[in-house]
Amino acid sequence: MISPSSLLPAVLSFLGLYQNNFIEKHGYELRTIDHLHMIRSPHLYDGREFVNAIGFTPEAKAATIYFANNELEQTHENKLSLAEIYITLCDKEGFQPGDMKWITFDVNADPETDGLITIIHKIRSIDPTDEVVILPGDFEWDLIARTEYFRVMQMITTESPEKILLRNYDYTNNLGDVFPTNCIYFSFSSDDTTSTTESGWPFDDEYQRDAVFLQELLNEAIINSEDLEDSEGSEDFENFEGSEVDQDSRESEDSEKNDETNSR
Image (cartoon, rainbow, N blue to C red):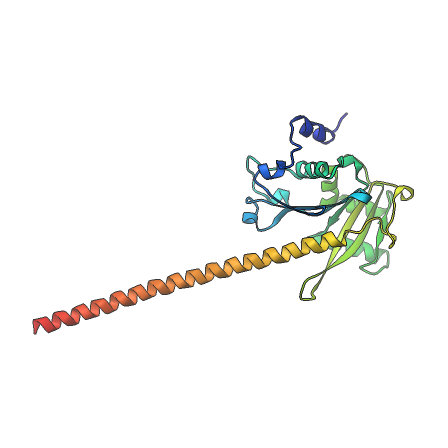
């Protein structure tokens, strides 16, 4: 039996949805920095948060899902699913979804999965930041398979992972604050077919991670600035209203005094 998700690329192609501005035509804001694509929607917190942030490392055939908030976006007639956005971005990068050797996820605002990863480290008696390799048949495989990340991975590819890696990455802001983040890597190729970098890791996405984090900080600064302006504007309006009341009061008092003088 053919899986409906396996037909999605062909259906999208037939409908002519692989356009350079397909995502924008559906009302989304798309910003691309090299191979990093950041998408916002006016239907998700008024465009203040990412719907998706997806990066590609072409030489390693790797895709990293930094944010997948599609299910939080309000329903509207132009809403795109994660699969539609991912497949469109793969096409922009010159890939088919099945070409990917790695699909990775950042664990964001998810204490349940963070706790699960902590338990896995404790069971293996290793440090919280040590890398973990999980193979089919390992009991930890079933634990990861129950997470949201495994489900989302299955939404965007029909391939089955051959191994799962857990890593930890430190985001550092401009104040020097460090934010440790768990990352889940699904590998779709065996070791002998995976090229590695000088560090021994299949691909390096540190630049993209820093870019995503910087964009979050900039967006947060803009939001805070807008909120401050709104607050100051509200105070100015209240002061203005107060001054009008005072002026009216003074004019009323002057009028009463004049009436008293005239009556005398």
